[in-house]
Length: 225
Image (cartoon, rainbow, N blue to C red; front, side, top):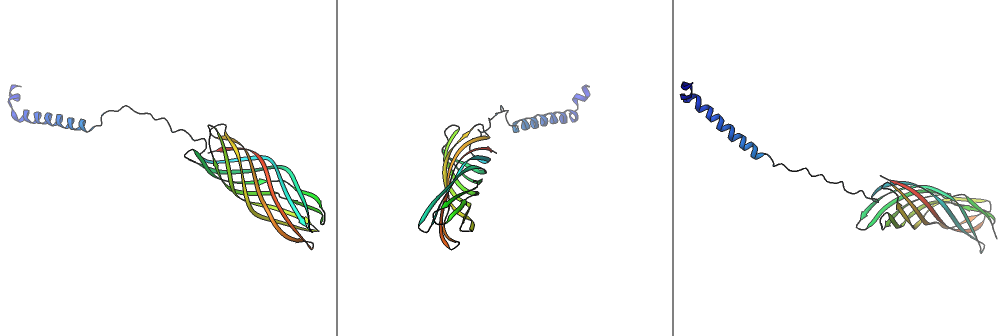
């Protein structure tokens, strides 16, 4: 054993390997990142208003038409049940909610009446589709809003044995109040006015001018995604 310990050719390589091992281990340990406590971040709060949504609405619709002919005028108004679908997308901008929305609504049937010069006439609007912009001001889980856009609405008039059906483009504006019942489910009350038609045409030889608009109050439920 003493002979081995006196042998430099055995001790020198062992010592060199030990020194190299210590140096390499120290360098490796220095390269390791110091231990850090894990940080758990809570998820960002979910917005009550931003994002896409889809809903259903039902309520009351009134289509009013003013029929003029031969210097005489007759107002025909029909109140009916209405229902429809709507969907859109909202963005939160500072304290406001800005959005776009599209919808389709069944407005009701036709109203029959007697015009002073035309005799019996029938008029009404059955359906309307719209695209509009919305602007709201959230207050906790309540949001009053205003809306403005355009609508394509069907309208018909039958007089003097002639019937004309048309689809016209007109403005639609209104407002309402939306309530976030949960993060996903919202309720709203929405009132809107739609300009339907304002034209003049001949019905069985008589010149007839019709001007029509629709008012409706709808209660809707929607789900955001």
